[in-house]
Image (cartoon, rainbow, N blue to C red; front, side):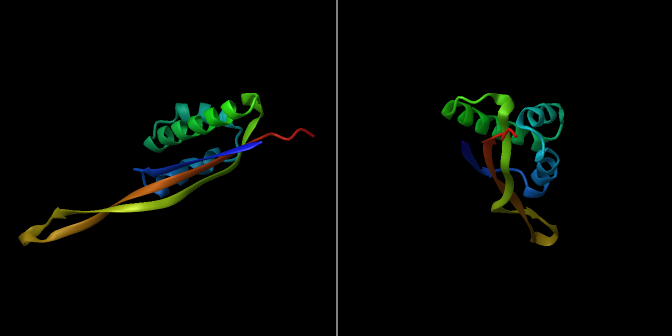
Length: 113
């Protein structure tokens, strides 16, 4: 059985989230949550909450144990951008963009051989 969770408009750039997601993608979900809880970055806290949400929906819809759950897919996609500006010299505007991300998580049960 598998469940999917899609978290939209996370106010962190995709590059920062992908850096953390790359390190936990191959881990079991329980071990990934332990690793993220010890990390100090803001991206790890966002991923921790989103994985916990995905795990809660998975465990509520099926009667599997937490130790049997693994990632099938964990991707970070680019979201929309907020266009902002700061004032510059001589009345000019210096534009910049605030990037947002979408997190897609698909959890499945571990196959036993």
